[in-house]
Image (cartoon, rainbow, N blue to C red; front, side):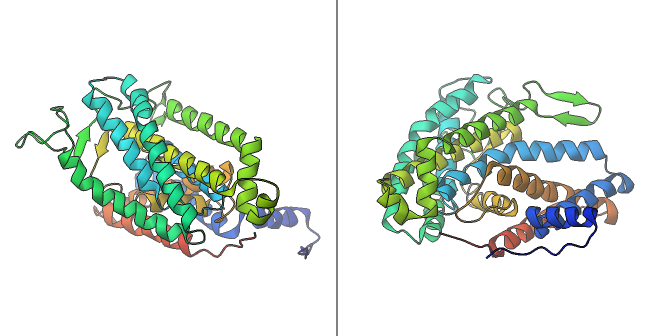
Length: 358
């Protein structure tokens, strides 16, 4: 049934209504609130360009993690709540690269190289499990993510690391909770071709890396294999009748998502400047899932545009809200406000009603 849009007779109003309908009223409200925060920033003593730089930096850190949602959504596996599995692969790559003594920006690329086989193996096992429980992927994925994080809390203490930059000094074994990347891949992307104009700082390298990964994802989804993946997510029975191997296609999407999660956490770390282990990855799937839902994705349809819009809106709100509120009330409540804002966005995203068509 085609929905009729009532014309007001005013071309401008009709255009505005059409834009609001296509962009989505909730996203329009969030975007308007973010714009209001940017406008208020100079009036409460927060530098506009500094806040814009912070938002761009957080966008560049998190965008790959949000992009990792796309393959599994397209294949019908739903939102990847098992993202910590890919994050663990990335953490293994980063810590092993440091253990091997690779320094500078080269350690970033070495970390990706080392993390890849871990991500592939984890993705295959994860994909095999999800193929066994079709229809309940997101719930099982949540417990997979929680389980691997808890298991690795033990392994970070037992694995035979010996680098003095990572192990506990008083025991001589076991990895620290937080590991500095100074001398390793801190700023490996963010400092590359970085543009600094007054208080405005643009992490050009990180944004270019995200652009390249997004283009590769877009190009893959337009290949024969990518089209087959989309067909599996849209209508599994039709895909099966067309001769597509459902389980193998779903497993490929899970491996891709896990690998992107591994790369994403390494991109996050190079901007953040630290590796955080133990329980740090526990809830990292929620902001990524929320961002892509806020961007307009559903559980079986997502695009690169959804990733870009959702990540910018989510990270913008999380960055700007505590800054503006602290400046207004002159109290240091940044962490409390940040938790309220981020969890509020997560609740909104996870309870948003979406039409799912198969």
